[in-house]
Length: 385
Image (tube, rainbow, N blue to C red):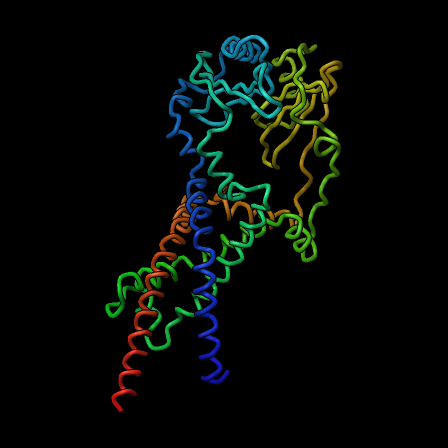
């Protein structure tokens, strides 16, 4: 590539970097900030509602039926329990999810209990309003009805191009690589912040953008991944979910088994060492109990027919190479199972696009001002000549 061609290519990349940054900065900022908060999802929820985690231990004292009955007492007659969530780690409460008598099919209220004593810690909507807002903002920009998820995906495409073009534009031509990574005395503070923070976060930001694209276009991403590596075929969907199970149906008013009997029956059929995390109660559309368990091989589901006690264990199939790649794409994006260091990188990476937008606009305005001054000087020189 000749010097002239490189110059033209660099000029093209600079314009592309500028206009993508200007065009997508208003969308990238809320997506990034909300993503930073979601990295610490559990911690933020504890800060917002510490009373829900003011437990005295993890050992469960009352029976599941007692927890369900106390939840009904707090919510009033007509409420129906839909799920009981069990503690997974120290400090976790028992959570009873119920649908009040006058609530819609998707509106639920949760009651948080201290596991050893059964004392009510809090009562409120099942989803924390602020964290639900952050999830919706990050996932679909609060406009799911207008293809918000796909818009987020295209913002990811823009951020990936910005990160890669930024690396090319930053790459030093005169300074050594080590000196170029630090603060430069001949630059304005805004330019220094844009260049220095940008190069340090460019590769992680490219990874977050790529994984965000993968999650925003799931069908296309899975098809592309399946063309390269072997993936497990998706289970056929029935009328109400995978396998035909209807979720979110009307809770049964009376069941043949108690929650404790259903739990004991499901645990007897579950793999050894699997830890129960939640028990969903039977519905009119699906008259079976559904126990979710965490195992070394992944999530295990055990269903128990309420009328007969018959059990069915559904274990995840051995992961194929494509499944592992897809799992890591999600983990790298949300920080689960990646450790504190990468979670901190994600947190910073979500905040910095706002800084890049501000400093980038400042650099652009200075460049425009300098270009106008240079043009004025040239015009003055021509007029004087």
